Image (cartoon, rainbow, N blue to C red; front, top):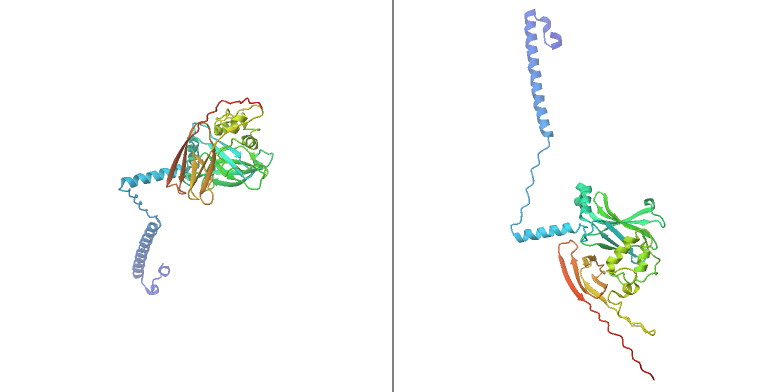
Amino acid sequence: MAKKMGIPGWHGMRKDDLARALVRTAKAQARKKAKLAETKHRVDEKVEKAEKPKRLKKPPEPKKPANPRIAARLAREAKQRESHYDLTTESDSSRDRIVLLVRDAYWLHACWEVSRQSVARAKAALAEHWHTARPVLRMYEVESGSTTSTAERHLRDIAIHGGVSNWYIDVPDPPKSYRIDLGYLAQNGKFFCIARSNCVSTPQPGSSDDIDQNWASVAEDYERIYAMSGGNGEGGDQLTELFEERLRRPMGSPVVTQFGAGAAGGFTRGRDFEFEVDAELIIFGASKPNAHVSLSGEPIKLRPDGTFTVRLAMPDRRQVLPIVASSPDGVEERTVVLAVERNTKVMEPVTNDQHE
């Protein structure tokens, strides 16, 4: 034991001295082990405290502006920013629909109705990603003559904004077939579809005349547009309903459709003599090139210099036309309201019986 414990001079010690030396050495080793154990315990406590995450202090809440006018202005701006992404339309219809129309070889026109319940469902489906979601039109190219999803190819996502119910879409390389999905796209790439449009085919270039830069009325070319937009196939009833809403008159009467509601009696026929009279309204203006301008809730395409021109049918009644321009960030908005009235009076025909 003395040799194992490393007691020096244990060879010459007597039994009593050797026993005392063993006891002293054992006590010294026990004290040393206790001291090492205590030191290790303190080190472990320090390491454990260092590894615990530090409690973050709660950030101070932003101070509310003392001026009530500033607070009201901030509340209005926040509400306006929120409405910029709200696709809910003012229609009383509870259903969701999007209809795609052919403007010409290079332009399509999408019209939609969205209920508030559908926007609420999109918000619930996107959950924590809702605050990054933006309303978009997802455009697909469809293989000619096919209606299966396997024949569709995703082309692009077109960012839109709330407060409107239709959008113009430019398309290259006609003729081709397209379809549109309306929904919300989150920053993580998740897309929630609200409504799916019909399939349309653009014509060959030059097969239709480009009358205006803004397609405000479809009265003159409704038959061609109706056929190219798939009205003779599936979804024809939905297209007919949409056209009658836009024209504000039933489809099918060439006189009413071509010349307007107040022009049916505006000409007389007799002895191969014809007299036709009608009127239209031209609205023009200018804003910033990147502003959002709408007429009666429908977006207006601006030229590169910010100017615009819109041609409208002028039926025999009073029209109130609000024109709204908002800044790109949605903070500032200006409105101009035009009130126009047409009153057409058809006089009795007069026949002069004069003989040479």
